Image (cartoon, rainbow, N blue to C red; front, side, top):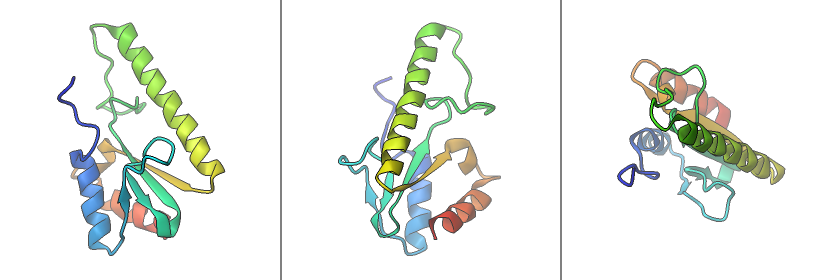
Length: 124
């Protein structure tokens, strides 16, 4: 478990490279904002979270599979992650930030083009 990264993950890097190529400048993992968003676009008052499907319990996703061992522990952990996500989302919205969330399954080869185009539209 200690080998699993929380920052600079492959899905996050895909989004960052795309945004940079389109001329967006951003800050990373801003500690002063609730939840330390992966990408912060201060000019657009927008934050982007890039979530792993397993860690954030992406319902209906083939990448979210409940482990067969220590099931209760994992379900509690994922439930807690979802609660924190909701709490951070509400705190950011109260502070007038626009919050966008992208799950890793939306960045797979078949969907990445449409996902990133939708992201552009939502930012502007």
